[in-house]
Image (cartoon, rainbow, N blue to C red; front, side, top):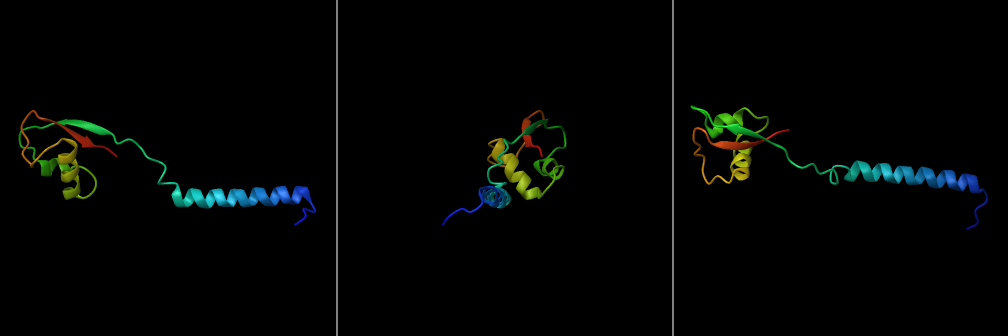
Length: 90
């Protein structure tokens, strides 16, 4: 294959490269954009339960409870007044 017009070839290859990069970014953009999770410290007050704390967060309450227990290394749902809990933030 012989290149007849160098400027046309360069423009064509640039367009192909931009299209390939755009498609790759659309497909895999979320995979490579990891963000370190952030947490808020909450001190348990009188009347607080794991359910009430999880309910105040966005999303599924059961998933929030699971996440809070996992972050804070809790074996069960027992929490105590004055206990500090890390709560995931969005």
